[in-house]
Image (tube, rainbow, N blue to C red):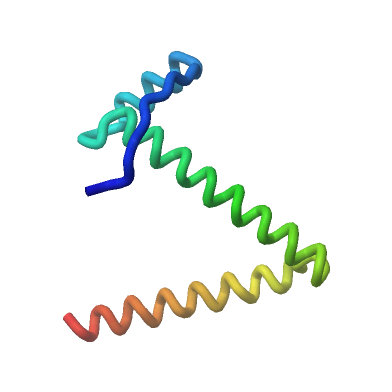
Amino acid sequence: MGEPTGKYSITMPRDIAEAARIRSGPSGLSGYVAAAVARQIERDNLNELIQVAEAEHGPITDDEVQALRDQLHQARQEQARSGADAA
């Protein structure tokens, strides 16, 4: 069984609500909105962690960001190759 739920009333622009309803699929509007809010909370938490880390260690440089992106790209390529080899 999933997490307990509560019923809430929210206000949003009609065009946004309608677009969300159209895209909501089988989970329905409530599930779609809950997933969107959960993603936003994750982003907010990550931003807070970044602020704490940068306050302690200084800002991350563009070169550091690019190096990490390169590592991630390489890891994904290796994972794709190993997945193809296993198939």
